[in-house]
Image (cartoon, rainbow, N blue to C red; front, side, top):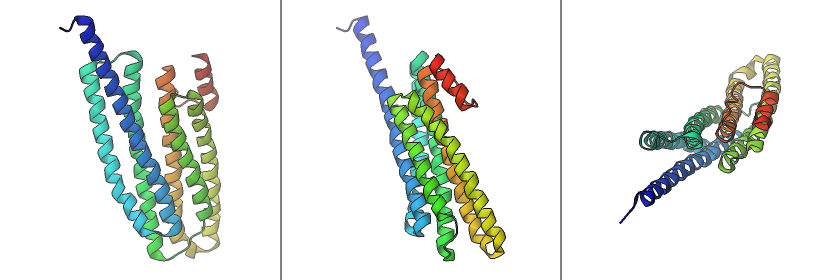
Amino acid sequence: MIDKDTHSDHISKQFSVELDEVKSHMLEMGGHVERQISDAVVALLEADTGIAEAVTEGDKKINQMEVAIDEECTRILARRQPAASDLRLVIAISKAVNDLERIGDEAGKIAKQAITLAESGESPHGYIEVRHIGAHVGRMVRDALDAFARLDVDMALKVAEEDKLVDAEYGTAIRSLITYMMEDPRNISHSINVLWAFRSLERVGDHARNIAEHVIYLVKGKDVRHLGLKKMAEQIRNS
């Protein structure tokens, strides 16, 4: 015989399992996205069309994972009607998944630029910067996911701080590339492809910051979107 308390405890445990599963699926998706970014950068630097094509094909899996996790979140909201911290967890996962899908899209764009550059046979200016910024935003994505897994707001704040550095690196790289194109118009065509790769990497950094902001919202219950780093740190300390 199952009494009311036992039944309630069983329901609670099932709910906890569902929350753990959807979080695990989001982090698994994050792992795939990390590899997509890394592979896309390698494809561009090494003019490897095979890796680039694998990245563009892998974007389909990322999209499928996004849809599946969104459906999980919707079922939890409809069936469980979570409150307080559990509700924030489901919302944060849903938002993080959207950012991960966008990062996957940017990886696909870089892969397409890699294919174009490989087919042109050029060795464009700016590859050192691509390698550097690519490694930087890759670390940001990994740290943002680690912060989510550990509910670590200090690490999340660090990711947000790193985004500002990436923006500065992006600006320097773009100025250097524009100067290179101005020196010889023949450089313009293939340099444009590198410029778009820079842009995609900068956007990856933006989405990594977004995921970090979702972590702060989840842990502290504070919406820190559109806040500067100083005010973001104050929200963390004062809550």
